[in-house]
Image (cartoon, rainbow, N blue to C red):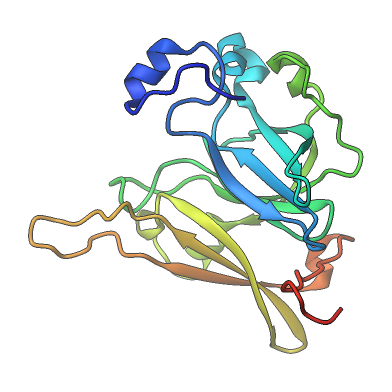
Length: 234
């Protein structure tokens, strides 16, 4: 996953490396499991050597798990893209299940209409370690995933036009529960607006937060275990 020749400019790094992360598309998403013991990272795009294989390998995104106490890498898994061009974030539901933000680059800020902004639920319970596998083999051993939330569909259904949905929805966080006809968990989604402004200084792509509610029933048998702050009572 590491590049052999680091360079400050993306073009130079791409020219000098035949393996490792694609320039400017490295470890984009990070999460810590609910028990605080494992750090989980996912790359934004396929590694150079995986993409070079073509086919299913070009949709392979590597997931790495790290033991928090020792700092040592424990496993490497495969996330296989569905229709998005990359992944921006991952957040833990519990010790082995996660929500992953898969998206394209279309929408507000890009001058186009948003198409793919989807949250998938993945499970690492029976996932195959792909550390020593090439891209094609890794693609055949991807983690199980299921669609949890189609953001574009929900926002359009609530009166937000496709060209007003941010192109770069990149932040995920599980917020506090709320009482809305019973207990409802909250998922907060934020965009990266890249500080884009027009010539008059007005922000044409403001920072936005979208809050979605879900119940235990929406998790399809999964359990949401809220992360406990360090030092808090268990």
